[in-house]
Image 1 (tube, rainbow, N blue to C red):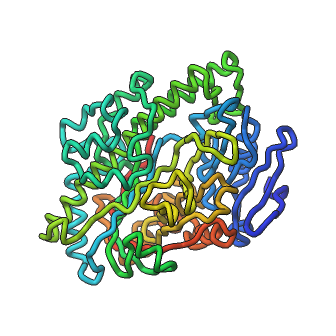
Image 2: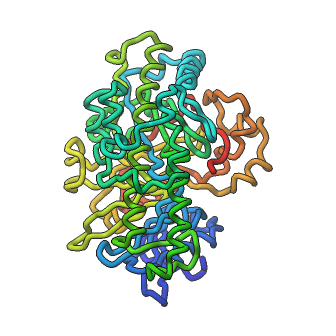
Image 3: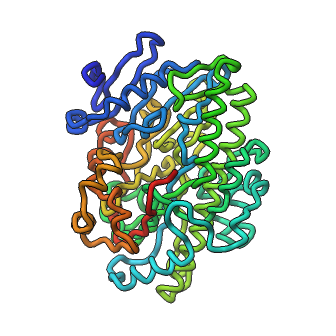
Length: 477
């Protein structure tokens, strides 16, 4: 299907589904387009454009690669009155997202020994790896009702954070409408993973602000050259994964009853206001609030670890939250005079300056969109321009894979991995478990980010460079 793509503007290619007349837009620069071998991901966008009530265009981000149903790096909006919701189009790890902490610490003050001490102190508090449970026993049986109704705010009240943290989290750390009674029993049984990273591409990263593109905005964000930052990338863990699995099955089995047949099981859907549609959205909100809570707890333990390792107070180091932004989510949003349900799978929201849904802190600048790279490569903070509405205010959420996990594990050795990450400090008992996350398994983050910059959709604020990484091991299931 690649040969059917026609360039319609800078870095934007279009394919029209002649059955539904919904357009498919994919954002790639020339280099990414020429090297693009993801025919299946184009077909997945095509399938998404067939769903009831889909609004044109269905969008592929520059980090697009094949996923379950909708590709990772896919954005699909449906009419809120007459459209559908699809569990697979949200994704397995509901509200997998990124949180960025800023600091007063100069990177020049750090050496390998200090960075290792910090990582060790974090890893004692925050387990990494597939299926790992919380270190604190009382977190292994979390209060799902409180998490559903209060999200991250519940744990802040319990002493896991600062009062002002809540102002720096998307939706105030709590998506409304969550109902734990809609969460399947199988998902409840996997709710013991708060304050854990998980596997896959999840991580905690310490690094420095290596380049500033917009000094005024960067200063407002508290991002200064050569200052240390912390990135936390994880989500709702097995809890959210199981919710997606269960509702994909339910939606597929009830397709005839609901009058919403998808072309493939991975896009199984239900009308938004059907019983299945509403139950999924209420369970999805529970998982989203669980993920906000997860990142909040990890933030608390990261702050503790810095205090322990560096023998300084939090006040001396700041460790302030800049922002916490979700991807893998479906949200009710208004475009023009129409309400839509925007599914972002491996995509993140980037509201431009002046948009009324921005937190007050970011009304004049637009909120930060945080785009992590692969292990050992750069990450970015960008903001959306007014043109970002062309993608339903969405940007890519990372670099995007060019190599499957299986292929990466067969192609790279531990020596290759160490060479690719160069001087980044990595603490892992088993480097073989990280081979599928080698930087060369991913696209070039610079090309991916600047694809949307050149298209006029985003402005770069800063470039971040990792110095130390605590990585999730194993593939989530």
